[in-house]
Length: 261
Image (cartoon, rainbow, N blue to C red; front, side, top):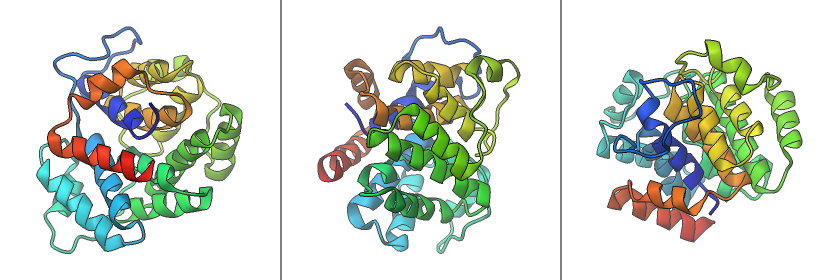
């Protein structure tokens, strides 16, 4: 199965290691602590917006607020929590990786790279209007869109490097030893893309992302979103992921999958 399930599965698999970093690829994919977090909630908020009216900023904000407040303890940052409770919320200059973790649905509904970029930018700027926040969303969406339409890894790598200036010429083994918790797009998105570029398949992508340590669930959501467009997500990983969604999130996932994919 392909689609936004890649980002959702990455989030759930990475969740036990967000604040309990590991530096190995040898771990159980799912256990009792494997749960959806803000990455999944916000990915599905974007999916809901795209189902309703992809051109409306007001509909986007309404859905992000609705999902965020439904799952107020999902793990948001302090500034986003403050944004959620405002009647007319404004962007707050964030350069954090929240813009990249939620963007994958944009790449799945777009009919062109240009449309994917337009949607990705809009999905980011309601909160993450700092240039680095927007860039992280765009790079992630571009990589996902290109993977979806059959681009090679070399083509994806070259595009992201030329368009966004990220250094993708490192290896996971080179990054891992000194990598620390980093919620910035600049310090998380290129590393997550590398985890995909170096992987052999979807599962290997997620293992790479978690093994870096750091913000494991978001890294795995970003990398998993790209990998879920490049490879099929194995059925057992799909099953273990969707069973961990509640009814509301599962129905949103199904609605997006049936309407737009």
